[in-house]
Length: 148
Image 1 (spheres, rainbow, N blue to C red):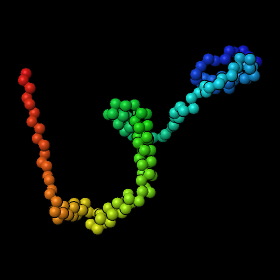
Image 2 (image 1 turned 120 degrees about the vertical axis):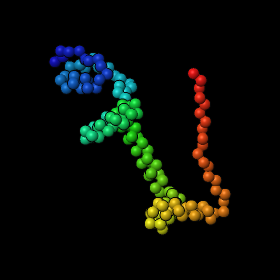
Image 3 (image 1 turned 90 degrees about the vertical axis):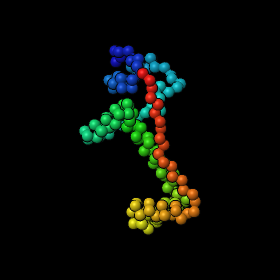
């Protein structure tokens, strides 16, 4: 039996609570046809994730250091990972990339994956290449003193 007016609200939760305790047929004469969507289907979806206290603390510190809210930082990280994943999937089947990676792997294996040996070989090849090698020293920036 109708004993309350229809709520005027944009809150889905409030409307759900109302209709959980009321019968729609009691309000049939107050309904009107709506031609466009009431709720935006493109709204973001909230997710719940479980984290250890230390993980939450680390996220909060990272967010504070960047001057952003915790949720904004987590969302940014997720979007970055999704983009990396998409790029990785797109390049995984690229023939040229596979070939370059295979050559790199074979070269590293030739030197036992020893980074020093790889560097020494690269410097040796550089010297044998017959091309002019330019080494730029550090750039010195003169600071002008301001008069007070």
